[in-house]
Image (cartoon, rainbow, N blue to C red; front, side, top):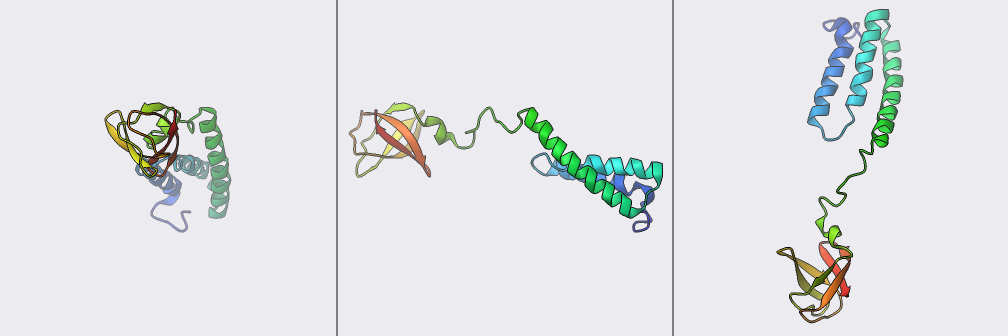
Length: 148
């Protein structure tokens, strides 16, 4: 790559690795690290063997595919993709299967239910206030309920 970027010389791949690491810090998720590692490895190989730019690109491509695949397998083995709180940003799904007492009646299929001082809109059969209801599902931002 020193032919295309004469100012960087043999340091081109190390600069690319550094830029990819900066992107990793700025972007959500874990992806650019798996490209930064092969870039640094190609930089080391280029210093040792002084390869042509075509060989460098091919080696980077092969190492990138292997690194992304290996990183994905590594993270899968560590159960990084399984969250301890899968409903963290979808709080209403945590209420499915739970039973509550209606504070207000359900009329014409719509009503309100208070759960932990939060008022939720519910849909279900018409029921009077004080009835025990079970949350059976979620429809948008409404809880679906049925008589318990």
